[in-house]
Length: 390
Ligand SMILES: *Cc1c(COP(=O)(O)O)cnc(C)c1O
Image (cartoon, rainbow, N blue to C red; front, side, top):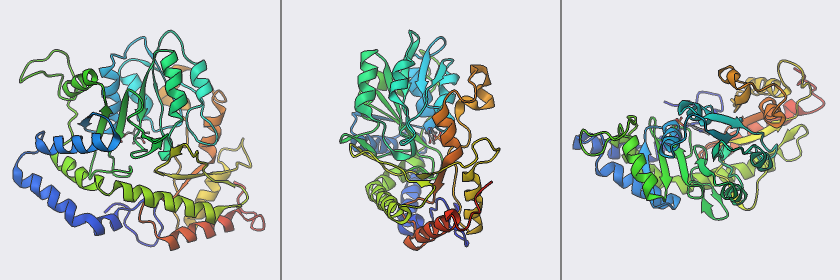
């Protein structure tokens, strides 16, 4: 089982969820298994309709992963060689990987230090004749300022593909993310807010032309039985996952509400701990707290390891597993050496990668465990202890 509790406090744990709704999930899976219809069919359509209704778009196209959702979105918009797509370097690699996969060039712009999301001033300043689209990432569940981003995109006639992999259910100004840009891309990887029991993804849009193209591209580009107008990929969501996701979607609001309460509790427990910066929020948006990510001020910015690394190691001694999303920004990854970015060029993303620490966060996190996390962090960071220099 996923991160099964032994003695440590895990960053993420599904065991309580399985205890609570495991039978419902099993029943949904067995129904598909006995039906004999494993690919396509009504189970997929039922999930697609439910998910589109939830997000607030007219269409949902289910696919095999969040990565594929982003890839298919770019294909459906005919973005490819010679095109530039603006995105953040402080995200999971898939966001940029797909831009490269279609032959276009990722243009990384720096982030805001408080939200970890794209710096919109720099987005605007990075637009060129070749820019075709912007991929904002609602990182850790916190929405990007979509009012402002859409205004920038409209002024420059750019398409917006929202990477909603970490933000299923998040809202900006009362609208769900994934319904604000032209296309929304979702991941159902097990640790995401709505997670499948395996891989899965979905694309949301209210544009019928894009929808038709996406449905073809996810199924080898086929139209009809064995006729191909263009080449696509095999990226279907399978029926067992669709059935499970349909069950889990009914619980998502409760889970997201629980996550928000846990975040608020962390805020109270960790308020005024020197050296810890708590995540900020924006009242116009609703975060769904895929992660609760604090910053640990870096006492030795030129050292190989950061103060955060030392704090993380100490937390582990207290049997608390924390995570670092992400330890190296994408513009400095060896895989992107060809783009020619230098260290120091996107300073906020680079600083964040040395300071971020994601604390245990999942809807069933035990309040006592949460308290243990806070007690341990306070102890580790208390000046009297003076143990944190790496
Ligand atoms: C998880 C994730 C993806 C990729 O989703 P998969 O379903 O794992 O392919 C893309 N972007 C972000 C920001 C993610 O967190």
